[in-house]
Figure 1 (cartoon, one colour):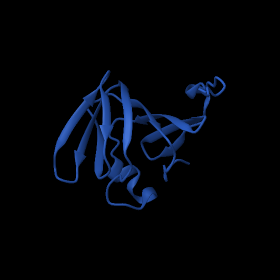
Figure 2 (figure 1 turned 90 degrees about the vertical axis):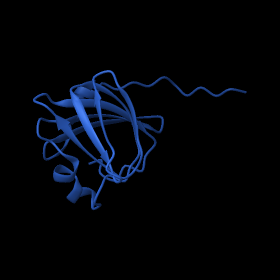
Figure 3 (figure 1 turned 90 degrees about the horizontal axis):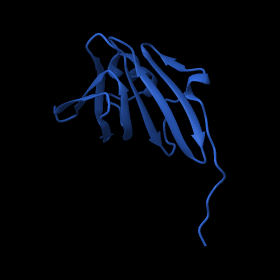
Figure 4 (figure 1 turned 30 degrees about the vertical axis):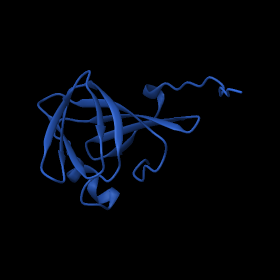
Length: 120
C-alpha cells in the first residue's frame, strides 16, 4: 500500500525571516521536510554572519538547494572553491564557508529534514 500525506503548502514571502547579520532565512516545514529561502545580502559571508551563532569554524550542515538569484561562492575545508549562480542546483557537504559574489543579493531555496541548528 502506498501512503500519500495530505497536500501542504507555504508562502515563504509571508514568513518573517530569521536575521543573522546580512543573512536572512525564511523556513516552512512541510510534512517533515524543511523548505528554506536563504538570502545572502551583498557582502554577506557565513563565517562573519553565522559562525558565532552556529558555534563552529565552518558550516557543518549539508545543503541541497537551487539558486534563484545572484551568485554564491562556496569554499570547502580543503580550499576548493566553486561559484553557484541563478539556476544552479547545489549539494554542499559539511565543512564549508560561503559568501555573496558581486553587487547582487544571492537567494537560494534549500530542502532538508531537520538538524538545522541555526534556524531561529
